[in-house]
Amino acid sequence: MEPKEFYDKFHVWVVDKGPQYLLGLILFFVGIWFIRFLRSRLRDRMSKRNVHSSLQPFFLSLTITSLYVLLIIVVMNIIGFQLTIFTTIIGAFSVAAGLALSGTFQNFAGGVLILLLKPFEIDDSIIAQGQDGKVTSIQIFYTVLITADNKTVIIPNGKLFNEVIVNVTREGKRRLDFELKLGYVVNVDQVKEIINKAIITTPNILKSPAARVGVVALELDGIRFTVNVWVQPPNFLSAKIDLQEKIIKDLHAAGVKLPGT
Image (cartoon, rainbow, N blue to C red; front, side, top):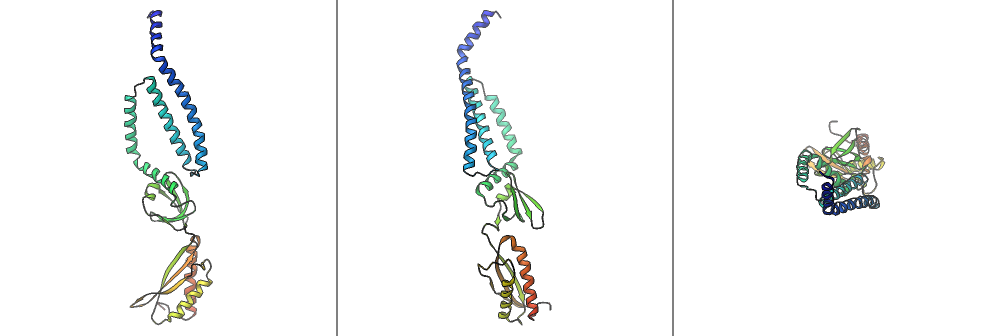
């Protein structure tokens, strides 16, 4: 190609395409500056609104990445780049990734909802998915519990959020219920007095709400007493053991006939 011919073609290209490329280049650098400015503003905004620390990096990354992708697509359209093949490839990849990671997306969505709606928080004791334990970590994809016997339980957030969650910590106290079956030979008032005294002298039993002791059922082979007391959630198991042992010992010491004796 002759230099003059090359110059003519280049001049035509500059006149025809130059403004588009120049506009695209200007928009690109302005867009980069704006996205960086927006990143710092979003970070400050989420901190002021007390967005959970586990969600802040994700929301920030998702927003900024989406803006970068949108900026590139807009710039390509301005300079006249054909996106048909590009968008087809991206679409096919997105469908394949969505099918492969459907379970992961469910766990992710569950984690986001847990962190936003807060059905439980760190250090709460919950019962879910057949597990009973203290929440030690809430991650995007899973939640970690420590059980009373010191086992670590990792529950996927997708299953956790879509099933029943019992939060035994949120209300600040928990009712402890158990029953005691005795024969018809016992004196009901005497048994109730012994149980009430045992409740008063057992540690970790709350005075308010008041305890309740009474006959809950009359059966062919005996009387069934119910005991309802209130405790703080961390003391639930120890209070139950102490109170039951105290009641049995006091009934035995008072000469109340126990089943099997």
